[in-house]
Length: 224
Image (cartoon, rainbow, N blue to C red; front, side, top):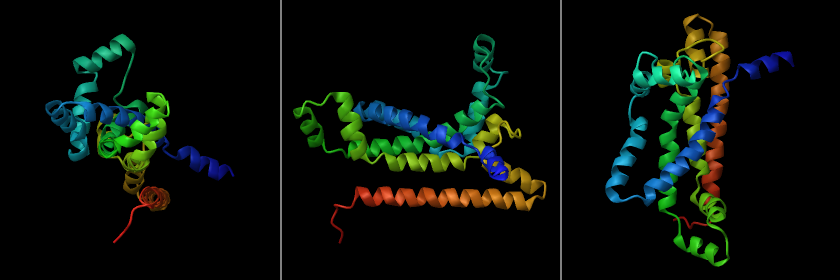
């Protein structure tokens, strides 16, 4: 039991928090972009999607330039609010969120653009308030759950940007991916194998859950 507790305490739970943050930010950003004009939509979509196509180390480099204590913005945050991002657990969350966020945003935007407006009109006819329509009609119909699952999977495997911004400090900023690389360098293949097995199990469960969500969303669609 104590060994299981030690394993659980050693797990990196940040992907769960990243998924929650990306869920709300992705939905908010997608809703705003869908309602924006063509020019604003093109620019905003490019900016919000950019971390998905950039190498993670490049995104981490820009974050490091922005939040470094040697840079004006990073120094201002630390001097004014004692807010430090570089080489902290907060840096892990921020870096992984920036990398994983575009998956949630793109999925939510595509889903919002495919919503049947007749569902919205029907809900309004029944007297539902707009906020309830959004969470009870739009979000379930949009299939945003699949974007959340993909966001979690991307956050779980993030390495490059996190290493650039937060470093690899054991028991402080070390993620599972970083831990695997670190123990392999030390020649500890047994520990590396254990964490690889953990990642494989989680990855399989993520894919299994994604398939279940997809099947449920298209179960009424006729197939050829």
